[in-house]
Length: 463
Image 1 (cartoon, rainbow, N blue to C red):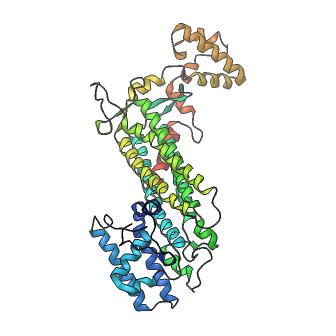
Image 2 (image 1 turned 30 degrees about the vertical axis):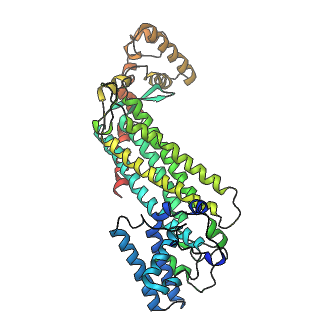
Image 3 (image 1 turned 180 degrees about the vertical axis):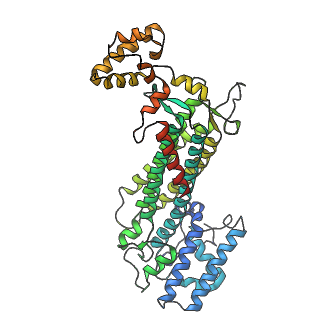
């Protein structure tokens, strides 16, 4: 191990760590992204030490000025971390501070452990990233609403079991994913609320022996409150699972969106066209235009699920308080945040570069007996029990299949052989327009309800 690498815990040891152990143990290569969060927490801790009379005002000013200078240097130098040799970002900051302000920097760690220091910095970093994810989710929601508005009156077939079921407005399909993302927003906001609790002041396991006002420090850092138990304060990583769980469901929804669009963009469906900006070609087949962006969006869900499971597996057997296993939480969360971020940005761009082939979608919605339920409802309104109506319409569909036509293309006499309740007015009920209009309950796909839902979605985005 390099001689210029100073450990924070070397006093009790007479020999340096083995090179392989040091490489295995150190986390600076990935936890350096906590740099700004740790500096912010350290500034607040220094102020807390000063208010408690543990360090002087001059010493606190020197520490705070030195910490802010480190932030400035990191902003100005792209290679600031590249050549550094440190066990982790926390020891890196302390070493740099001591180098800058001499022995006064050694007083900063008074009253805290790396255990509560790490937990605090990680929570601060996660809080910022959750806020950023919420903004990106809103961006995808806006793209969905814009896509819906571009094709507000267009119709597509809805599917169950991947078989044509009933006609719906395309905008209704768009807003279905809007609703999923709304739930994702709630989950991220709930995760933020639970993580916004400050563990600083918990010490290593037992709390601090110095009279630092934790509540004042928490307010300075924007935390809602402080942890109530020092053992739990340093060992709680529920917030990491909260974030990765919320991210997992978000990726489920983005993956389902991608799957729908991949199918709809295929030649077999022909509903959606993706612009060249979000498509790729084949190295062999000149005619190909592949939905690679959507396939990646679908594929990246798996790594987020894996990160979530790795956190649960890491935590499930740990005894109370801090264990080095917890170092493994960082990379799982970092990768999840990175993956969610690029996936959300990509999803928005894909939606912005998608258009509906309204003619092809309408043609599909008009074939395949999607008005069969409307015929059954018509018979129910005429007084027939639904189960009887269901059976009668099933036989009518079979008859139409044999004749090679749709239900609305059958003659009145053909339809009446299945029920003498059927009259000339039946054809007014079998059009796509009538089918859509009939679905007017809250949450339905009628044009009236769609306009209300679209207005409500826009209002949510403007709040």
